[in-house]
Image (cartoon, rainbow, N blue to C red):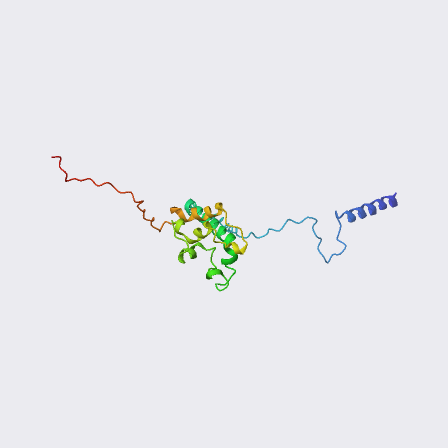
Length: 200
């Protein structure tokens, strides 16, 4: 019985020492560590001021541009003049360029004229009289058939081609700085009235 009771006491002591509920620590030199420790208080830092947020850039708007003025319409007279002039120069080059064209030197060209395709030079040379195709030499020689000369074997200039040149020369819209030619009196006499005759 005593032995049995002693065994129970020893067993109980072992259990208590294993569970840490009593008895001495195995090492008396170190104090027993508590099973639970309260969390340490951490020092609080002063509140940090929030950094200012960068302001959003205001979108730049382009300054209002004044409306551009409307583009002027081309002057129909100037445009028509350019086309008519080019057509007349093409007729002269096509029919007379073989002997008077710009590819020839004045020495090679007949009569030294190598600018038949340039109406402005023909005016300066006196071969075109503005507003008077009837007295313009380039028209006269085409109409009488002397240019191009029959000896060259070139065909005569057609009446339609001659009219292209003549109509350009005679159109006052294409020569705004040239005064109109004087009207020639056709020779009609104005009957004179004898104001001094008396009826008696």
